[in-house]
Image (cartoon, rainbow, N blue to C red; front, side, top):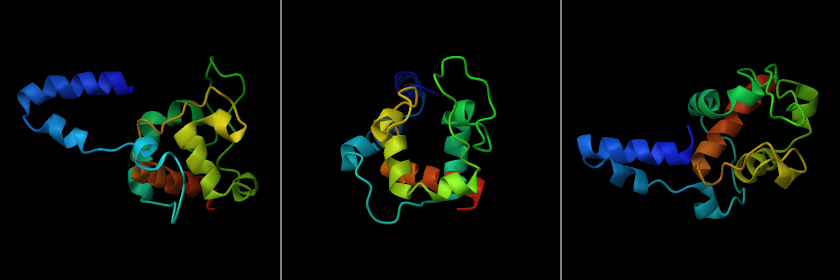
Length: 137
């Protein structure tokens, strides 16, 4: 779900559920919190990452990270994230930057949107942990 739609839904439900918008305002995206600079342990909770991946990433990367989906707007197919040889060549910092700042920031396709203004630092770490399960790396 896009950030503007999410905000509209939060506004709508805040009328029905007071405090919902206040709770969301406490949420700080990674671009704001750390300017998308990866540091420390970059692997979070894969279970939380799985839910995020399913909702926001699987349409292009596939449920298993194998990029086994057809996406008409892509200039190139995403790399197979279940390939252990390829994934071993990518440090977690690379994945963090790719998610946070988008594909162009790491020399990949501009079609991979930057998510740093949407995901929190912890959510990006959770996604990295889940993505690593595809290749057991």
